[in-house]
Image (cartoon, rainbow, N blue to C red; front, side, top):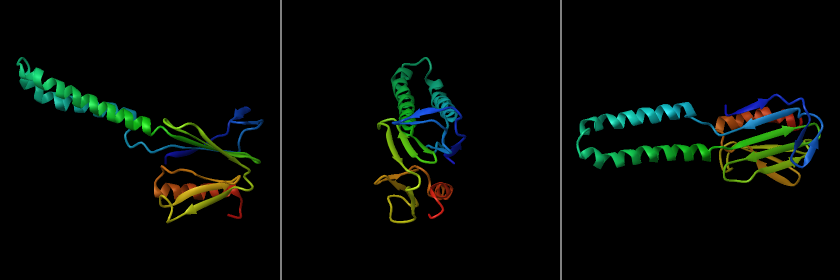
Length: 174
């Protein structure tokens, strides 16, 4: 799954506007799923380069090569730019930090500024909306007079599993 529970750090840290003197009791990192890892991207580009270059071997030594070569290079360059843009757009990380007296959700992305939400965990309400939300199994956290979404980029089943894992953190009444 494209999220993991991180072992809390033992050292004190400065987190946002709130200085904490003890590590969180729970820390969750969420990120968009990557079907093609970076190593697979390199492999794909090399294989594509070779497959496009094979027909060009016939044109070696002829003026036709110079007419076709710019289009060949443009194709490879376009593929490279498209994949790099896709990786950059998908560089999103959501961090949910939970202490006994404080909850913080931090979302960082490529094009958007860092967004934070803070609340008291005693008053945080987890809501799973199976249908009728922007996506199926829409998960929100409500607290401090504000409602925020968590895990929007996860699949339907992953959001359902995430809600089940988050429920014990925000009290037995939910």
